Every structure is written in structure tokens, then in C-alpha cells.
Length: 224
Image (cartoon, rainbow, N blue to C red; front, side, top):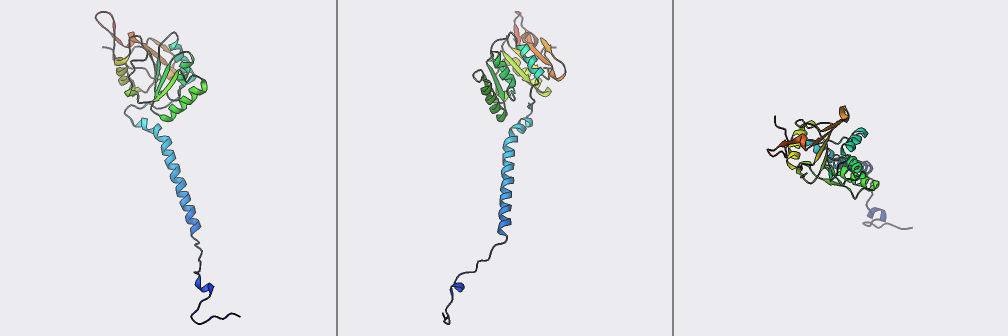
């Protein structure tokens, strides 16, 4: 039988007594839950910011998909037209893709990067990515002088300043096609549809000013 000498200690006495931390498991779950919530909020912010940011601008252009009737009328307005086409605020790209399918070299400018990436994917899927291009850009920073056909799904508060910009930049043979809301100081050359599906087409004689020699000077606002 072993004996314990005075002043000596057994193995059990030498090792510290491990006391289980009963609160560690709940604390770990709390950290996990906090991480999940924090990550979700960051992801939500990343996804929604491109949609919310345009609405905070002075002239917002919210994304509202074009209806089948609007697309039909836009293509009618483009019948017989040639040259490049631009969709101002191209959204999910459906107008640009439809125009590319009928032979236009079409470009879409959109501020929302998620919609631009989706549009590029759709153009690739539809086999028109060579003639349908999409760019992340603020429409107010784009020069439209290179385009012969302009499509715009606007909102009332932006139509007047946009008309002034287009009037200064477009060439005489350009055509502007407005959907949902018309340009308040222009006279349309053609009109299709009714209600929110109405589409207006404006040619140079609609939004131009006559010079003394009979030629047309492009202007954003008609004289009184």
C-alpha cells in the first residue's frame, strides 16, 4: 500500500480542478447569431443600395419594366429607322435587346450595376451581345450626339431638363421616343397607345427651331 508522506501531494492534488463553463455554449450561440445578423445586414445593404441611390438624386429614374404593349409601340416607332440606338435608363435591358434583334446596334445606360449585369447576361443568352451593349453610367453625364434613335422611360420631373440636354446634343435626323410621360414642350410626330402604355415619337421638326435659311436648329424647348 502506498503512503503519502507529510508535505507531499498526490497526482490529483497537483492537477488543477477543471470546472466546466456552463455559460460558454449560450455565449457561442450568441456570437454566431450576431455574426449572421450582421452579415445579412451587410448583404442587404450591398443589394439595395444601387436601387435606392438613384431615388436620392434630384431627378430619379426608377426601374419599372416595360410592358409588352410599350415594347410593341417602340418597335413600331423604330420601323424604317437606321443608325445607332440608345435606351436612357435601360433597366433590365429588354428594349435594347429587342432593338438588337431587329438589326439595331443598341446601347443601354443604367445607373444600377445589378441591372446592367443582368442585362448583359440576357443579351448573351439571347445571342445579341455583339449588338447590345450596356454601361453603368449616369445619363446626365452621357453625350447623346452619336445616337440617331433615343428611347426614354422617364418621370415627369426630368422630362424638361432632359429635353434641353437632348435638344442641344442630338443631330437633325435623330428621333426621340418617350414612354409613359411625354416631353412637355415638344410636339410629337407620332403617338401610339393610351394611358401608361402611350408612346410618343419626336423628330427634328417636332423639337427643332427653324433658322432663317429654312434648316432646323435642334433645341430643347419650342419657342412660344
